[in-house]
Structure formats: C-alpha cells, structure tokens
Image (cartoon, rainbow, N blue to C red):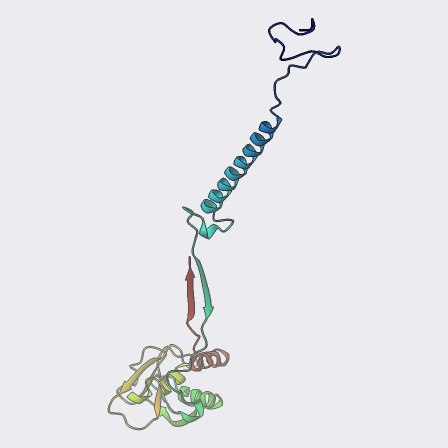
Length: 214
C-alpha cells in the first residue's frame, strides 16, 4: 500500500501521481431539467383550463351566451307590405250626392253642391231637407244612404265632411246618398285634407311586423 493511499480504503483505491481523487456527489442536473419541464407543463394545463372556464362563464366574448348572464331582448319592427283595400271603393265621379239644407240659413245647399262638384262628385237633388231632418240636425251634417253604401260610398263622401254622422236605411233603394247640412256646418273639409283622407282610405297604412329575439 502506498503511503498516499487514504486510510480505510485498503488497496481498492490507489493514488497514482501527485493528485487526490475528487470525491463529489453525482450531478442532478438532469433531474432538475425534468422537474422544471414538468412544472411548466402543469402550469400550462392549469392556465388553459382556467381560460376555458372563463369563456364558459363569460360567453367567450358573446354576452348572449354567457352562463348566468341575462341580456335584454331585441325588438325589431319592420313595416309589412301594404295590403290591398278590403273592398274596392268607388271614385267620387261614380257617387251621386243629394245636397239638402236642414238649417235656417239659405243658400248653403247650392254653395256646398258646387264645391262637391269641383271635387269630382256627381250632384243630384239640391234643396231643403225633408221634414224628418229639417231643423233637427244639430251637428255638422248627416250622410244618409242605403245599407250597401256603409262601407263604399259613405266613407268616400265622409272624407269631405269629417265630422258628419253616417246613417243607412235598409229600405232605401238605389245608390244615391244624401248630405244633409246641420246647424254646426260652416264649410266642407279643406280640399287638401280631404284629398289626403281619401288617399289614405284607398291605401290604408300597413300594420307593422314586430320580431322579438332574446
């Protein structure tokens, strides 16, 4: 045994030369690298899971799909196609109107008949109202016609005297209608307003279509 051999090592380790062997523990660099990579992977998985849960509860940027989030409903209103009139209304030129004065003021029947003629109506009898209505009409007037005129001629003539009362007689024959002038009458509805009312009567405004989505 050499004198340089440390005690207790017997002859297993022999010192050759003038240097002692380096007694270091085995390096653990490989284990540290593996541990670091495992930690990074675990953190990545945990982060991805957290992001998925965030998307689920927030709707992934879409408020309508978020869990537990109540959003307001959206109501869209769009005009429907303009419907056709339920019944074909006669033009003023196809309506014959008898203009009758039930007031004490003379000349109203003739004056009113002339104005209706300018607006395209046919004029029949012009004079005083029958005893049944004479001096008994307190409003602006009465539009009187057969039952068949209720939804045809009477609405058309009604555009010319908006406040007039409309009446029908089941026993009345023919197609002529009466305009009986009352005590509150001053003049016919203004021509421009009457024309707009007549246009609206022939082309009623469509009912809007309402679409609600939540």
